[in-house]
Length: 108
Image 1: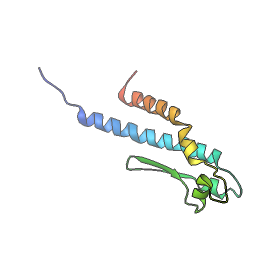
Image 2: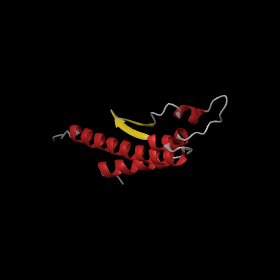
Image 3: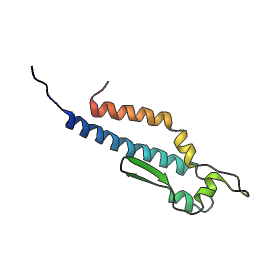
Image 4: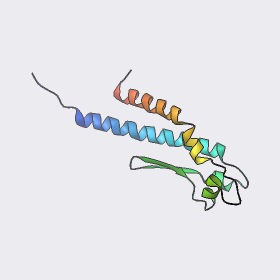
């Protein structure tokens, strides 16, 4: 009797699945954040970007007033656009993760 080890192949497959999931999930959340972002001049909306690096996805803006819009101030009501974009897509992202794992690992 012999045992075949395919650990390295499985690791590579899982890594590819994680990368695909993060890229696709980041696009979904970024698109929803853009749709939810309040528009005055359009600068904030246009600045919403995604970055996938080191098994982490980040969606955000480099506009200095972005956090003030998201969280509000003592003089301005919060108009959240980033957190709701993630929260409202959690079920969709869970299904996406399952779908990608099934494709990469040959699951049902």
